[in-house]
Image (cartoon, rainbow, N blue to C red):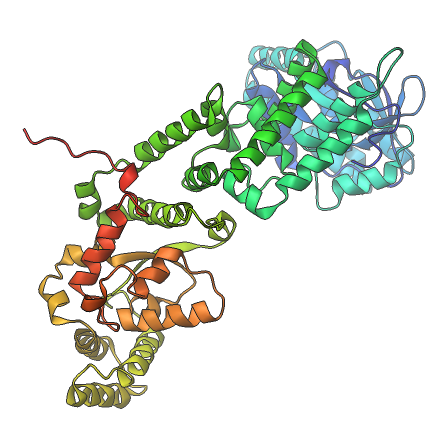
Length: 579
């Protein structure tokens, strides 16, 4: 945040009941605009906290005198809290009113109306309208929670106690030299709130400045912070450690801070949990001790990235849903080799397959497991290139929508639209015309039938023609053993980006092979094992039929998957002994 190194910044948690003084809303802000949704959400947040420590969004202020404040950000929240106090006092539920006052630079009448809340004047001014509507919403909420006077008193007692004892705002007193309007604009254009990372950084820098007899480390820490953020902005470093909860974070260092803070992730994570925990850790030890943990964790991430085995195993685990923080916990107290063994065990546990279990996998019932298996095969193929510096690109992998594709699709029933039927026939006609291994008479007949369809096509005509075309692209040895399961088995599946249209997804091997080669020539990312499957890399040379995906191709591909050298064999569990 601009100006964080300026003297005078203060960051703390402040109970609502401890907020005092007079707050001035400057001219660069609009008036009060919260509606029923925001007011009820605030009341419900307070109520559902049940007396446990709970942090509201930050309130940003600048000193305007001994007990006076310029309210840079948080006007809507402080005004609503003010109205809650006013309601409880006016309804006779509490003897005291708000502990602070609010005035406006350019709307003095709004400040007066905040004191009166006269319903007769509510429609005379847009500010009056919203203030009165919020007050009415607060009254309705208390009446709904407390339908009887006695119950309403109990609700008010609880709310008042929560506000004075457990509900807090993150109080950010901006440095004197910081331009208020600029800060307000940054916080409110696009509604960019203060984040855990920004709040912790401000707290860390404020407490690292030198006092009497101490060394000022603020500039050093600020430089380290920027360096860590810059390292984590490297797309390949970020992609192999950023779990789903961290992927959308505006700052990358947040991943390290969240990990050190611990606690639940995602939506279950309490608001400003990381800031609150790190603040407490700093109070229990020192801000430097907490910062040293961040620096150490950053060094660990870079170490994992440089070690190819760790990079690939960690990247795979994170890609299939493992939390970065859990991996950090597993590494604690272990040597590199011990940690590597733990990673192997974790992959084995997540995969949870035996060799026969791999053979039995089906696209129809085990799609997620098949995808994880094939991703692991691709990662392992690259990792085991001992004389290569190549790395599997988790950056590209995580930037693409992936799907499981049948290497040779024998069914086109999922195509339901005339446009899809025409596209399927067009793709297969192009391949059919160039395929010399198909009997010439048969090929010419199929080409004629496709051409005769024209624009007049229905489901029955398409399905009959598609079956005959598919049969022409299917070798006899493949069809003889092509049970329904073998079509959907992992030996007939590969990872591809899901950007292909449905007609191509239902295409036969030769059509897909041509498309793979075209994409490869265009520089598109094709997973290593997918490319190798379509180039018949796994099939012995004397058994190759370039234009077809045969039973022998499937067997060779399955053996490669099960292999301990480039496949996933090292991560498969032993078969259960026969009883």
